[in-house]
Length: 637
Ligand code: ADP
Image 1 (cartoon, protein in one colour):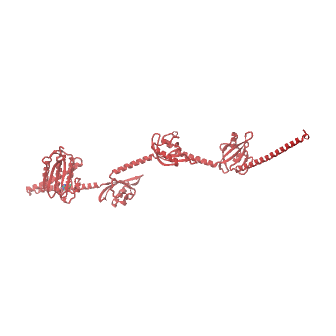
Image 2 (tube, helix red, strand yellow):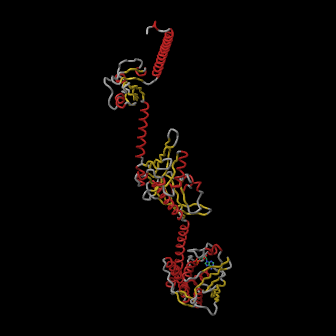
Image 3 (cartoon, helix red, strand yellow):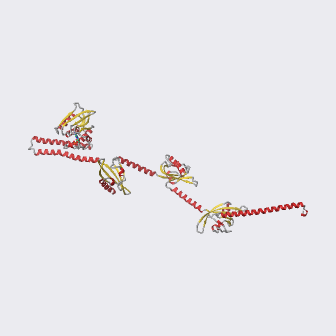
């Protein structure tokens, strides 16, 4: 239809349609402009974003390796269009390859997935930086990878930290494995997660036997409660220090250890595991135990000795003393730590210094000294032995013995010897004199005078023989050869005969014998019984120089005969009575002047009475007289 043929209505409609289309075209042009503006803004935003990134960023063409786009961080301000990524980042002429320079592009083309690789970058000065390259694929409309977005991170610091960590882990691993003490790692649940060689060797388990086992397996049952308590403490505080425990080996042996443990934690402070170190102190404990034992032994030896023990250092300073008695010259606090010369009198110090000098030469030295203690003179013997350590003189040990009693006995013996010599010589002088006079003057002397001389000689010879008899009895006793020849006998005749014998020595005394008519017999050695009686009667005579009555009485009492010899003489003090029957006792009494005696008689009496199973005692009062009594067993008791 031609336009001319169209109706007016048709033309109006067409005009309307055209107007609508014009409006539509106009609207789409505005939309296009808006979109372009939007894209421009997005591009600008992206460019700003990329420029603001501190890390290098590129878009690389996957087939030519050329850089399509890069931010300033990648090219250091100069964008080199058409430059390849390998030329830009490594100055290489060929694409990256190998382990140090794995090419992310190749990987992306193969996998069509994002990829991360690490590269080493060298700068002109030879410094190395570790780079982590992140690559992301961009696909074309056919789904092939056309470009790669890549950005690089400098991970040198992270790498260095990782290496340092690895190194320190390695060091710890080496320490853990080679540490001679027993090392364990224990989880917070109390399970073993690692054990070092030293521990395995001692406890005898294989590592796999212990892994994930409870800690209980390594502790002796008696130590487990304490170990549990320490484990709790470790979980609360993260530390355990030097705690003594007993571990048990697979074979059941026990070893004493000192446990220290620390906690390894994560960043949040939560405990990951413990590092526990056990120091084996079994040998040390045994050594200490032995030392204590030997110290105890030594102490009991020292305390069982009557001796005093002193230890001096090399400067003669008192460092130790041990005494079983309280009786010391001075209280310990006044001499311990002081030099010998500071506390001892010069005369003793001189002796000690000499002994000390001998010690320094390795010689043992001995000396004796005396001290006034509690108003008494006490004698001591000291034996100083040197102590050397690694060949060097470090001091001396002095063993000091109280020898007062020995000294007293020595003195007594000396006195006794001179007494006995004197006692032997005086009768001999009388005998020799009498016999010589009788021989030389015989012609001039009357028969009565000669008889008197010979009687004197005989009497002295008798007393001499008696003295020698006493000496012999004592020496038999000392030699343990005092044999009795006991028999059943009556004492009446023996007493009468002995009195007759004694009477010859004195006419000034009156002898009274008080014996019941019916007297049981005794079981005794006749000669010994006679000696006892003789000694007592002789003393009764000697110690009642004013004369008086000497009474011998006998009575039977509880299976024994009690024989008493009483005099009215000088008597004996209480102190004198106490030591009367001891060896070599002559009482110092001015009233004894001129009374002969060797201090033997009573001792012999005691030995002989006791050998018969009897006892002897004295009752006396000064100036009133003494009564000596002894018992002899009855023959039928
Ligand atoms: P001695 O040979 O000195 O007589 P004894 O052992 O017989 O030795 O006596 C020891 C000491 O006992 C005497 O020295 C004397 O001091 C004292 N003594 C012994 N008997 C008597 C006595 N009957 N009366 C007083 N003193 C006595």
